[in-house]
Every structure is written in structure tokens, then in C-alpha cells.
Image (cartoon, rainbow, N blue to C red):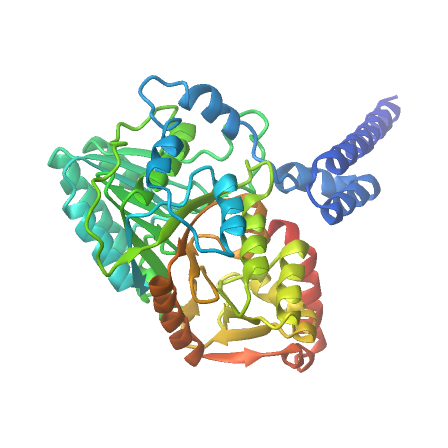
Length: 483
């Protein structure tokens, strides 16, 4: 009898797993954004639910639930919040975009939620020493508040300098808010955060598992890097807080790019931080929303700046559309620097079409891997890229981590978004889009120097590898949805 009952329980369990697999397959077909992903999950959940079922409910979703609802129903209704009024206020300093580009760029402004603004100054910060010298100097000079957000904060030499600075400013009466991603900063000791809180620094993880519909989702990240000081100076780009970003890690020289901004665009960056902070803490940060006073034009002034946030809460896949729109608008030159190259089909097809119409399309990638699977997957695009004239280069002087786009002679983007599925669909990202010939010329000179330290690669580089490597490349490509 006992054996019979045990077999009955096992049979009921297996039946339940198959029923859940079928129901999950229906859910995947109805909710997964890409047809390829829906088919892959649907087939695997029906045919082999024992493995696919837990994987799907942990990694299978690409829609982050509750974020937009919380901001719309709570943050924007908060009496202390002026976030809702910011887009209208920024229209007072809306920039005039160049003829022939205005329509395409305005699409990005509509998706991003704020207009392109004039009256900004922008400075490229190349590599970690320049970046952290500028960030630390700005925080040191803070009079009222500092908003600080990084994907990774480490308790190493740079991380402890960073902590000491925040402690010093909090002791001086400056309001300091620190937001970090709990997955990216998983190794950060509790004592590091505890010491900051004890000194009056407001600290919080982003909480990507907040809400019942996100509870088991470990696939989302807040990958943004934002620093705002007194609502007047801001930073955005690719660096995190750790010694490797100064070139002191095992990968050697760390090639990265950050951006220093001053002007109305700072308030748009502040708005993004305020939204993320509210999601994490359900509190509105007390900050200054007044537009900066108009200043006389300077050599650093740029014609137009748009702050463009993207993430898995977007209804329209804004990060993919960012790349598609800039690619479609390229006429002569399209240079993209990214540590990872696993684009979705619309972006890759846009790159192919740009190359076929004669645009100089170059993709700059690292020669050294920091994430082996993503590195392997990038090789799977080489043959199709080569057939249409897309040029792929591998950076040789250390590890390339910058996220930079250059379009023709007047449009550039600097931010946190990589050219991979994780940034396109799963990560919260932030990019500054600048429309200005002078700034674009500076980006062009910077990337030209990078290409001098790179070697062009081709499909032959993959064919020359052994069969084990080629098999690994194809296997890595299958994991595209979660890379």
C-alpha cells in the first residue's frame, strides 16, 4: 500500500509539473516580447518542463512589473515631488535640432519623456583617473546634496576613498543619497553600508525583486551610473566604483568613457535618479528643480542634449529603438564602442542596411573577455556582419568597457547601455545623446585613437578556431535571451 501511495504521489507530481509547464508555455507565448524567445520557451516548457520550468520563472521574463505604475500613481502624485512638472519646465529651454535630423531625433525625445535642451556644457572624461578625479572634486564641492547611483560599488581602495568622501560630506551637513544594484554590488559588505547609514548617508539597493510579480526574477539589473551634485553638475557613463576601473584589475588598462554635464540636462538626469530612488525607498528625494540661470555661451557649450532612460519597464523597448533610430539616421559614419555585441534582430538588420547603403559602420569590441559567454556569442555575428560590410574591431590595449555611439559629424551618445540583449531588454540604462559638431569631433578624435589600438577581425577568425570553440560560440548564442 505504501509503495502504491508513493507511486501515486510521484505520478500526481509529474502530472502537475507538466500542467504547469503547459500553462507557463501559454504564458510565454502571450508575454515574451520576441517571437524567437516565445517559441524557444514554449517548446522547452512543453517538452522538458523539469528543467525549463524553474529557469523560465527565474530568467524567462523581460518585462519589469510595477515600476511605471508606482511612479505614475505615487511619485507623480506626491505633494513634495516636482517630477511631473519637469518636462514642461524643460520646454522653456528646448533646443532647435538641425534640419534633416529633427524628425528622427524627436522620436527619441518622445520616447525619453523630456525634450532636447540647450544651454548645456559637456566634457568627455576618458578613463578612470580623469573620471573619478572629476566626480570626487564635484562631490567635494557640494553645498546641499549629492545623488549617487552605481551598478557596482566595491569595498576596495577606490571604494573606500569613495566611502570616506561620502562620510565627510554627510558630516558637513550635505544630504547624500546612495543607490546601488543589489546584484551588481552583491559582494559589498554590510558593514560598508552600515557605516554610511550610521553617518547619515541615505543608502538603498534598487530592489529589482520588489513586488509580487518580480519576486522570483533574478534577471533584471539597474545598470545606470548617475551622479548629481546640487542640481547643477552631473555625470553619466560607463564607470563603476572599483579598482579595475582605474586599470588596477587583472584585465589591465580599463578603457572607459564618462561624461560631465552642466546645464538643464542635469535636471533630466536628476529626474531619472528620483524615479529609481522612489522605486527603491518609496520616498521622494528633496532636491532643487529650478532651471539653472542662463549663462553666456562658452567653447564647451553644446547645441542640444537629451537624457534618454531605458529599461525593462518600457512599453516599447526604448533601448533597442535608440540604436535603431541612430543607425537609421546615419549617412556617412556610424561608430559604436561596446564591451558586448549580442544585438537583437532589428538592431543587427539596421546595422546591415546602414553598411549596405554605404555608411562606414564600425563596431569596436574588446579583445579580452570579462564575461566569457557574451564574448563567445559575439563571434556568431561575424559572418553576417562581414557579408554586408560591417567592420568589427577588437581593442588590444587592455579591456574596452565604454558605451559610445558616433553618428556622422554631429550626433554622439555616451552612457551605460551596451549593445547586447541584457541592455536592450533587461537592464535599466541611461544615455546622454548630444547633437553638436564640436562635441562629435571630440568623440571622433577619441574613437580614432581607440581604433589605432585595435585590430580588425573577420569571419575567418572564427573559422580558424577549432571545432570546440565554434561549438561553444553557437551554444553561447542560444543563451542570447539572458546574456
